[in-house]
Amino acid sequence: MMRNWMVAGAAALALPAAALAQAAKLNDAQIAHVAYTAGEIDIAAAKQALGKSKNKQVLDFANEMVRDHTAVNQQALALVKKLNVKPQPNATSTSLQTAAKAKSAELAKLSGAAFDKAYVANEVAYHRTVNGALESTLIPGAQNGELKRLLQTGLKLFREHQAHAEMVQKSVG
Amino acid sequence: MRAAAVAFAVLALAGCGKPEPKVYTVVMSEMAFGPTPAELHVGDTIQWTNADILQHTATARTGAFDVDLPPKTSARTVLSKAGTIDFYCRYHPGMTGRLTVAR
Image 1 (tube, rainbow over the protein chains, first blue to last red):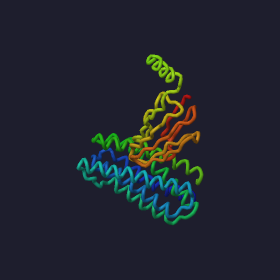
Image 2: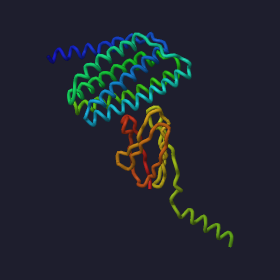
Image 3: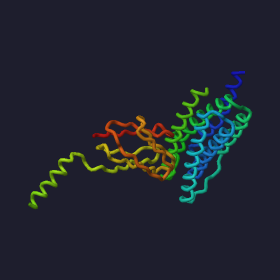
Image 4: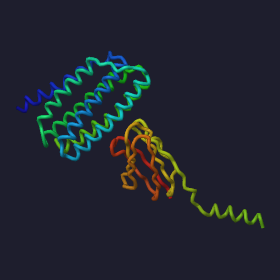
């Protein structure tokens, strides 16, 4: 049972990680779309948590995710508008969305402490994956200086989120 | 007589011993606190300016202040005690800084 759960968890995580590893060849319009999508996914996950959790630490964390990712995405939208770039959907952002949808359905079946534990574990893994992709492919791949800078600020921020998620995980895990 | 009055005024200022309180700005930008003033004294004011796109706090580990700033806002803290004050952002604890306040 435990083993099946772990295998399923690993499979759910493997998909975006593999897709993000392909992200090296993306252009700026595609990179912007991946970054924006990654933020939207985390906002949606946080809203799910705000509707289901009763744990103050989890709720505080989820509120922070909504607030910070909304701010970054607003900035990203303002930037692409200024640069006259239309964010371009691509295989990486699609696979992120597919994986997120599956994870959301899985979390929807849980409640109470089981939900908190699964949500926070996913937040730790998700930020780790996205941060790895930002660092190794998205930031080096960005051609526009302003986009690169926004992604770098994003990476600093999401590392904080990862640390915060790991801290919450110690109390709910 | 006039010379004596000037001399007295100079002495009075010098005798005061304490510099006039000053206002210093510390800027939060791109997930970091900017540089803090090298020389601070009791009575000086820190103006915290959040130039970032994100909400931040300037929170003293001593409990001396806790300023919560939405993006593009400012607030002031008067330094009322001498000592070293380490501060951080409650939302993003990796953001840290230090104030050293002399008497």
